[in-house]
Amino acid sequence: MAGGRRLLHCLSPACLLLAVTVVVTMPGLAAARTRHYTFNVTMATVTRLCVTKSIPTVNGQFPGPRLVVREGDRLVVNVHNNINNNVTFHWHGVRQLRSAWADGPSYITQCPIRPGQSYTYRFQIVGQRGTLWWHAHFSWLRATLYGPLVILPPAGVPYPFPKPYREVPVMLGEWFNADPEAVIKQALRSGGGPNVSDAYTFNGLPGPTYNCSATDTFKLKVRPGKTYMLRLINAALNDELFFGVGNHTLTVVQADASYVKPFAAATVVISPGQTMDVLLTTSASMPASPAFAMAISPYTNTVGTFDNTTATAVLEYAPQRAASLRGIPTPSLPAYNDTGAVTNFTSKFRSLASAAYPARVPRAVDRSFFFAVGLGTDPCKGRPNGTTCQGPNGTARFAASMNNVSFAMPRTTSLLAAHYQRRYAGVLAANFPATPPRTFNYTGAPPNNTFVSHGTRVVPLRFNASVEVVLQDTSILAAESHPLHLHGYDFFVVGTGFGNYDAGKDPARYNLVDPVQRNTISVPTGGWVAIRFVADNPGAWIMHCHFDVHLSWGLAMAWLVNDGPLPDQKLPPPPSDLPKC
Ligand code: C2O
Image (cartoon, helix red, strand yellow):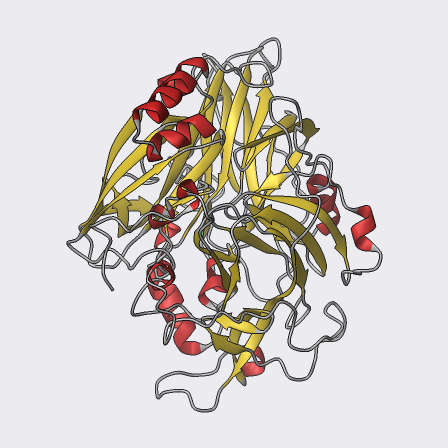
């Protein structure tokens, strides 16, 4: 891969010769291509649950177009914003090595693409293969603006498991009868929790468990005795999901575009932002009943309301057709608050850690951080007219924070532009706290004062620093699991536990051999998780809860990773069409 990367930055004949040699001798790289896509963001009319409405789409499709590329490919995505709203796109999980300008979170790596404007995202897929996805990264627009990003291995490189007969992206989503933008605007005005979704969806279809929805059912036609790979993506806004298939066992082989040691599971758990490739082998002969339900239902410990529905899709053995979907074998999914089932599942993930796919876990740590993650409140006093306080007890407003800092998006520039120009004043403060401002029993009785502070505070990191972050859930307003997503990196999940992290005891139990590598990990409810990564990618990288409601409440922070000394360790200048704020 290093050879491929060097191509970008070498101009001398000797260097080019070397690079060409490297390309020719490395299988896969020779096939690296540039893939061009056009995203026309347009409103389209869609009907679900007998509600017809106009939703933002890419090219009129919902869910959006499927991008299928190979590891090593370069992507060029021309985005034209034809809707009456700002938009940006994020390529969730793509490392964006020295292409931070293409990462996409609004106000972090770019200003939004305004109505009528365009921006071209250019990046390369390096050292990743499996399933990722793309989604809008402005407000809650990702409710309908999302699609799969399938990364095949380089040509001629096999999977480390038998090649599946078919591969099928299965995007799990959340449908709102209302306009999701109105839902979050209303919540931010009232200070209360947002209205919950009306249905869960499989590839945009809610299926027969909802009123007026039986014709909108995702159906996967299969043949007996074959292995299918389901590329699961949780694109829901605010819900972790259980997934299972009636009478069929699943084998997990990949998570967040990294291979894992295969393991079997009847039920999987997938958090918003996460992806997971699972193998499903159909029964050797035609089963008595040709159809089986695939089902999803929420996992949550919230004390607030949530969408407590189950969506189903159908696995149907061709060429038969089920006479009726009533009474077909359905997976028995765990209860919505079954944390034991979740822990049992998540504890099974291990990196492949093979010669071909080594786990380069940082052994030593240069910078250690301890972030308390959770909800909090804002006082009612001093709010502008028209805002109310329908948060906790009707006396405050909901907020969320890391180390008690509720992240405030910059508005006049992006963090990355400020960083590139070294113009920090008035935009950000490089003083995000490494530990909580006051210690308390994070998972015990919450403190009396739950007010958060607000700010655009970041952690600067030297290039190649090896970083450990312990993410500790708090029980403020309710212990709840938080799917934390780090942009620009995959991290290793070296440890996890319930209760308060113990710096004296817990590190001794870390897995530094084959921990799973991910871009999104759920901080367990009332527990903690420790992650490690090497800051080898210069830029401004947001780390945030992938529940959009918590992100809207400020559950985020950002890292500023400085350039390294070598030419290929520096952030290139911004593209000329980078949108202005
Ligand atoms: Cu999938 Cu910051 O997002």
